[in-house]
Image (cartoon, helix red, strand yellow):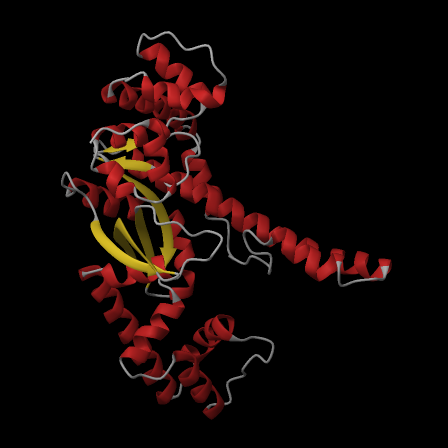
Length: 363
């Protein structure tokens, strides 16, 4: 089948990337979309020795598709743009890694991504009626929370850039340049959106329930009470779980030691199981997306697991050489059709996508 630009655009918006990948024109559409910024497309016309049409910038993408520019030229353009951008970053990368290792705490301060404005409006703008109280709470609370928010955002941004560069420099990878939704790079002709994640605590809870084991939090609270380990009254859920994981291992009682050994053993076995076949956790990650950020794009998950301290797994995002070794081994072993087909359900609708997972574990 031969696709028109309108058909390809419709398939892309409907998350039907599998149909685009199966069609040569669909593949060309996706690769063009990976360089769809107007300045990049103008460069592409010049590289293809074609006269750039006298149209508005937002019409250039469709015009480039209709111009039937060869895929090899599109790929060459993308690689040239990426190589130039990469050279600028490379000079500062070693010092950037040094700076990233200075971050000692990963705490959003209650101001989570995509909810910053809502948090401020709900907790300060609409709730406080006294001006002096507002100023005091801004000084004592909001500035501290904002600092945590900015540091976490900074850390996530630059570690993501470093990790993406590890992929994009590999010979089997075609980089997407600019900010392109749903596509960070292609492995051969398959587009992927890279997602760096950690072993979800809710997924661990689900697997323990399936194995007919009590929740970690229940067991940790029990042993804490038995051994007079303080339980923070102002914490709940995952925050309390992390707090007790930080306290219980350091109590000398045999019950504490045995419980932590059991919890670690279960988590370790779960990571081994995921490493053998990540299909179940990948499906879970797709099916448990938030409403606002949902899509069914092809995702390549990088699962970071620090088995010395699971709640410190965020620190592995800056472990460039550990990640680099695993990613290179994965890409070296990739065949022409990378990833695995994943079928999942979301809001009573079935989706089919291509995905895979690379486990980065520190033992």
